Length: 128
Image (cartoon, rainbow, N blue to C red; front, side):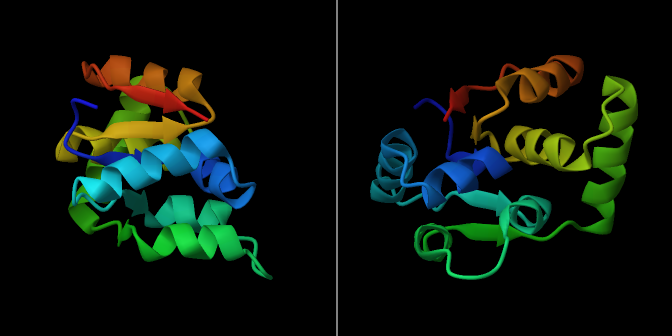
């Protein structure tokens, strides 16, 4: 992994909860490098369904949950308009990954790639 860490999209959280081997392998490798993965707050809201979610809770213990600041919200809104993409969570994942020089873990690489291409970023995307 040439990026400085990982940013998780909602599909990554869902994969962790269903105990996906690839997801957990990526997560462990990142933690071994001393780089806690980032979960944007919108991703957590989209992926959290309450009730017993033991695997997701275990995953989140090793992650940094990033709040959406006013400045980031403006950057995300601008990029969403440029990309003509109305899923703010997807766009916030890309904006944050670019800013942090992270790779993205997602189950929807097409949407992430579309936004990254409009931003002019060559993101590494891991599909789960």
